[in-house]
Length: 341
Image 1 (cartoon, helix red, strand yellow):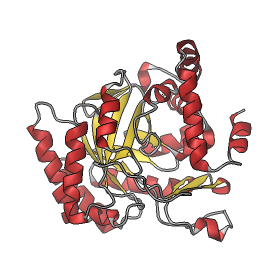
Image 2 (cartoon, rainbow, N blue to C red; image 1 turned 45 degrees about the horizontal axis):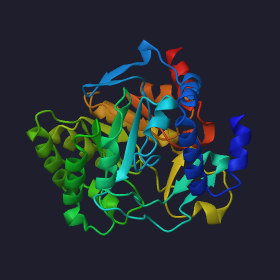
Image 3 (cartoon, rainbow, N blue to C red; image 1 turned 180 degrees about the vertical axis):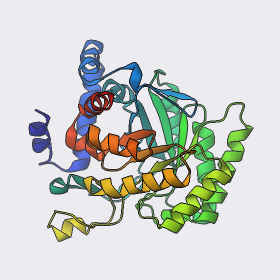
Image 4 (cartoon, one colour; image 1 turned 90 degrees about the horizontal axis):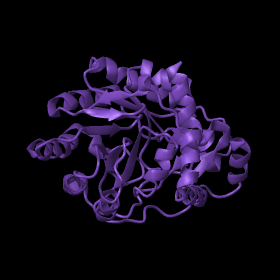
């Protein structure tokens, strides 16, 4: 059924369809009996799926990666679809429109997407206000934070600090995003010294609180082994709580899509082409950290087998995004049932 709907929706531009679909889900979930039906049919609960990590209780290990619900507008609806956790954002201090449209492109033959959204969001104050009104439930909320496009890299630490302070009381954990390829110069912040400045400042603020929040770093799949080793060293030095591996890739290797104009579009590639590389990075990080730093795995997860592959590689939790587009609203339930088996 979903495949027929998906094929129909794929006739229309990706970004408008994304908003249309979420707004339809919002309308349905605004009627409590309908939301109860959706929850019953699309959620799957079992005590064996629960996970204790970072001092938080995840009802299942399947989360939604950042970028899907940038402004924390659809938490009620995403909870009905069974997600164990949702990462909102990327949130920046000031609202910004992101890059010019079109900025999302489908590669159906590859089960992939290319996006160059550019951290479009309503700004940290609007997101905080919305989260303050969120009726807290067992679903964990992560805050993915970044810098504004107009902020120079040498001042980037200030943007991360603003977002961290503003969202501290309304999210359960933080992810520092320096790995998106869609903000000019952002990935330069993955270099060791730049990262140290950002993360050490956040950790100092974090440790000054009565109760600190888990602080994670999201990394790109395009890092060299030396860069990954720097990430590991820094993670221990600053006592990060976890890593998110990985963001989208700027690579275009081994694509089936033969439209050179499409695949040459600027932006990050996500989906099935990223599966193997993201698993490699998870496995390498797990080995280098001796499994002392938990990893959230992201990249090419469509099925229960994909999720198991990431968990077997050393991940503690998994995040989906592109798989959600291609597999539909049953994806969380299907993965959870597979993991339970």
